[in-house]
Length: 123
Image (tube, rainbow, N blue to C red; front, side):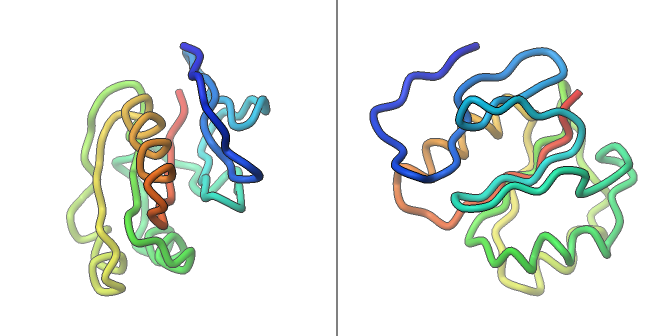
């Protein structure tokens, strides 16, 4: 699916997604990717959503988002609640959803001027 955008300036926005990939500003990404307005990191985890570690969650808290969107892949799955403790302790709001929904929600929140980060499992 392609997204239409009015103007993103120099911010990272999702411009499309498909089976096994997402596109940020015309750049295709796969695997596990973290996207913020000004930064992209590939390979944030080597596991699926059910195996994300507390250390990986703590690293995501280090991005200092207001809201973290955790994209669980093609289907909705939730990580173990204890894994998200570092994010909650840092005062980060966490929303878990499938990856496509996370891409759409990220773009909306970014357009609203929110400090949003999307940590995605792309499969």
